[in-house]
Image (cartoon, rainbow, N blue to C red):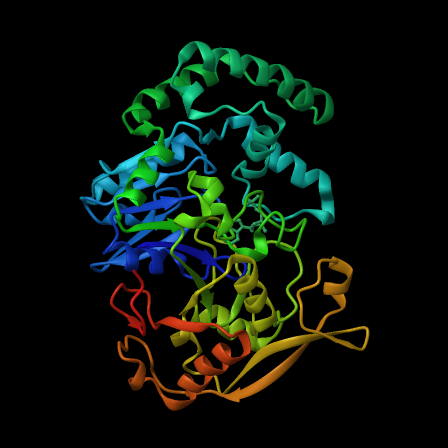
Length: 427
Ligand code: IMP
């Protein structure tokens, strides 16, 4: 079945955007299945840099259907801005389809995101502040506003009134904020509704029909395994399911409709926001990786925490998403490193642990057990054949494969579409 789910195997920012963009060239549809504008994908095509937050990466290919699935939370102002930018750069957005079941991020979600974070003090998650968590909270609380409601002024008025009654209580009494005004939000959002109406539809039927017709469909996860609400480093996670199973819930396909799972893994580790990160390097090596890799958030501009590759994390990601092969990215960023380390297990209270622990206290004590390998100290940037990689680089790739039991089907050595080594056909 020519359907592929692309997931992040670490803490996000693995380069999924580039891999999805690369695969999208052959795809009939690209479906984003969770998250919102907390995500940031950088795609470089024909020398132009595109920073995408909500638009699926396939948007750069005219004719590709780009679905924003039901488990994506959409800030309409951000989406409209991104669509406008795409058009201004000569792109097209006519292939966009937004699920009528997707939830809408409202001004009170953004406000509450910040207030809740502030009230947590040093227990803050370090969210992107885009209202993601509060919007998913409302969805689960069964008071969220979906596109289906936004498209119907009467339903929207009813939903907004109920929400403002509840939210204004909290905003004024708990946080001492001013209440939000119904008319202002109502009129603003009706304006968004009119602009987005042509794109809103029942996407699950559309996607299932494409799968039945044997079309090539890509499912694009945002964030990554270690930020998954169940399988990540809870509570330092996002509020949705970036793992492969999220593609089913987030677009309305059955598990048998997934042909292949590609796990995007960066050749080293990074994390933004708070939370455990056993292989973090708070030293000159970490700084060197950050500078070589320009590791600053696309969405918030925050410097990313950097560290060695953690194979415990990769093995875990392979297991919980049933990853068939890796797309190993940003290998070229390590070109100048004299030695490299791969974490194969942790030592916790004197015991060797090879599975990712659920308990944060255990993780806080985890000392990485490393294998050290010589670097290759020459340029891999832009190479397109695996055999052309320096021997030590191939050894690094193959050692990762051996430790995780998962092949690297793609090796990426640069941000452009064409700076990609493909070792097996994907569709
Ligand atoms: P939220 O998704 O804004 O609620 O943030 C929750 C956690 O997920 C924070 O640690 C964020 O830094 C992290 N996060 C959210 N989106 C991304 C992403 O696209 N890449 C990396 N980290 C992310």
